[in-house]
Amino acid sequence: MISFSVSDKIGLQKANSMENIIEIKNVTKKYGNFTAVDNVSFNVKKGEVFAFLGPNGAGKTTTIKMLTTLLNPTSGEIFMNGHNVTENPHQTRKSFGIVFQDPSLDNELTAYENMMFHAMLYKLPLSSYKKRIEELLQLVELTDKKDSFVKTFSGGMKRRLEIARGLLHQPKILFLDEPTIGLDPQTRNHIWNYIKGLNEKEQVTIFFTTHHMEEVERMAQKVAIIDHGKILTVGTIEDILKEAETNKLEDAFIKLTGSNIRKEEGNIGLNQMRINSKLMR
Amino acid sequence: MTGIYILWLRQLKRFIRKKSAIVGALGQPLIFFLAIGFGFGPVFARAGAGNYIQFLAPGIIVMNVLFTSIFTGMEIIWDKQFGFLKETFVAPISRFEILFGKVLGGATVAMIQGLLVFLITIIFGFRPHIATLPLALVFLFLVALMASTLGAAIAARLDDMQGFPLIFNFVVQPLFYLSGAIFPLQNLPAALTAVTNINPFSYGVDSLRFALGGAYIFSPWLSFAVLTIVTLIILGIGAYQFNRVQL
Image 1 (cartoon, rainbow over the protein chains, first blue to last red):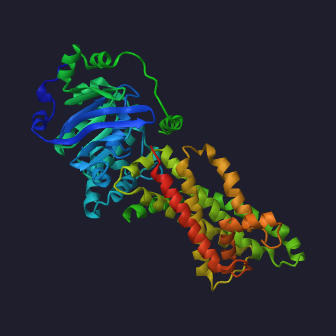
Image 2 (cartoon, helix red, strand yellow; image 1 turned 30 degrees about the vertical axis):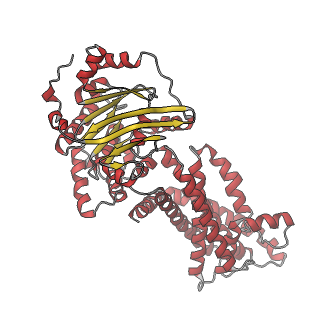
């Protein structure tokens, strides 16, 4: 049931003729004997909406961490907006905004203070960020809540604030790691509408992960599927459906990655932290 | 610099908003000062060691600054858990700036707490030298900075607060009790002398006592050097640990 026509996919034609904003070249990340990401290469074009999919523990988050300077690759190179991510982390950091899987706001500060804080961390000039904060809060419909403490916010409001915050320094790329996890359909719909609008209005490249395949079908121009640290396929949704000989992306995903339930590897401490922070959300 | 400033400001804002915590943190030094101070006062006087309140007040101020600093430094664990640290890690600012902003904020907050305790001790009969008060502030700030750095360095290694009681009982409490805050460091058993001499906080207590006009045993210059050098060493270790933090 793919009822989306090509013209529905915002800016696809535009994106085709543009250069790569993210280039990942033979990137590997090893933890001891365990290879979390195995010789991964792909590119993301400027202005594209790119979905990065994979089962739990496939290497998605590790890849995003390498892209966003939180981890260094064991080998390989990443270029973002023309900057070598490992060699030039600060320039890279100015180029992207990110909404993490888990909340990363300061609950003891107000919405406005969280925004102001971000502006100062990114050393934005006062003259420009005051107006931009107002605009962004308006975009995510939080203007009337700007002086409320974040701890009083619902999960959806926090997400919206994080999106606004991620855009404050006018990044070229916005990373969204499962941005709609735990949100009701209404809020999810709103959030994707903002993101769509941003991609159109500000030409922000969107790089997102999700487990909701209908979100991918609705939003993504390009999809990469990763499993066991390796890229299985990169292409448009049509390409992937054709390759897997299925009608729905969900079926294609399961066909490509298998139907076994994954054990999530890893660090008990960090997993516990995730659980804790979700409880506190 | 803006990065360090904003992290410092954040710490201050969070502190000022927790009014009940500020008052609550004054409870322990108050009890300590009144019970120990007036309880042991007569014995101290009979031993010919002078006025115990005069002796104890700087120790209690250091106690409060030490506990508050370590605790604020260890708030980095909360920032890990609540995800806020990630927001700073992907910002165009170095890990050292993040650590230093945090440490400065923690030290400032502890200084404010320490000054509140200072006022309490004055209300209950402590009579410091006013002329050397600026010097006292300098030494107190060095103590705050050292403790805050220590808290942050420990927190860099921990993923949750479960280790906190261990740290508090086996690191923080000994640092306080073995610092000469509550008893004079002269004529002690040799082992205790050795331990108190290698405890950097002994120099913090002693230098504050000097600056507030009390009896002191170490040269203030020696104390200044010890406090500065130890702080720099812990800051170096903390920065190394903090660079290795993975989220």
